[in-house]
Image 1 (cartoon, rainbow, N blue to C red):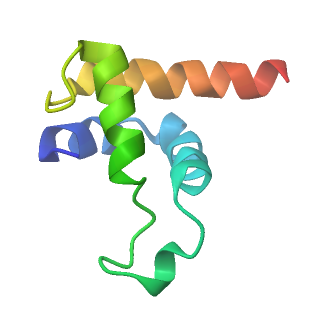
Image 2: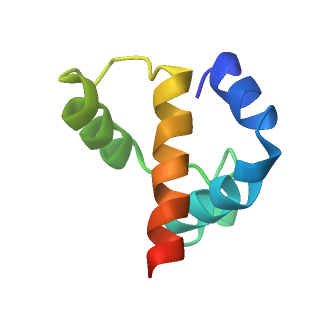
Length: 80
């Protein structure tokens, strides 16, 4: 995740709960037992997401796409 993406989320307090929820949902089981001791999704999952979004597993996510994704997640959770 890039600094600009983190900054975009920090500027949107209405999405903080959603961002935390998504971090928890995508973190691998036992993430706290391995470095970097953060709830970071697996590399395979990230490559899959980047390939399906941008067509390139090495693409850098655009911060506006991350915000749109979190907004979609929030709406999806509200609808459930």
